[in-house]
Length: 113
Image 1 (cartoon, rainbow, N blue to C red):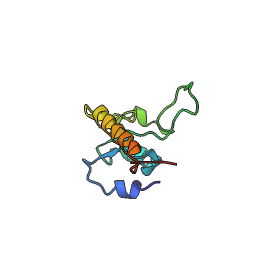
Image 2 (image 1 turned 90 degrees about the vertical axis):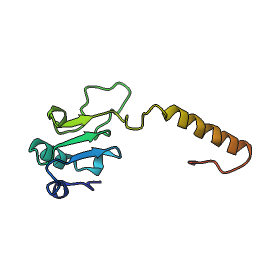
Image 3 (image 1 turned 60 degrees about the vertical axis):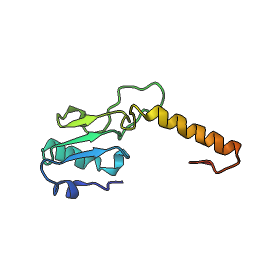
């Protein structure tokens, strides 16, 4: 949490673009807003949000408690960085390999208990 903060971002090159495809809180939310609003860095591309709906009937919800969505130097995407033309092929292959491992009593990959 807050791994990337104002002190780090203020020392970045003015043309830097921060890309976050990990977890929102890795970048300090207030500091991100501050550096983008003041054009300390060029831009940010964020595939993760700070706020998520609490139930299935989502009310109007913004990605952050700060008005990041009003800035012209940030791009948001809804967890879509993993999507590619090969995604389904990779998933299908992974599932088939795990089913084969299960059948042959071999170790299953990425098992969570």
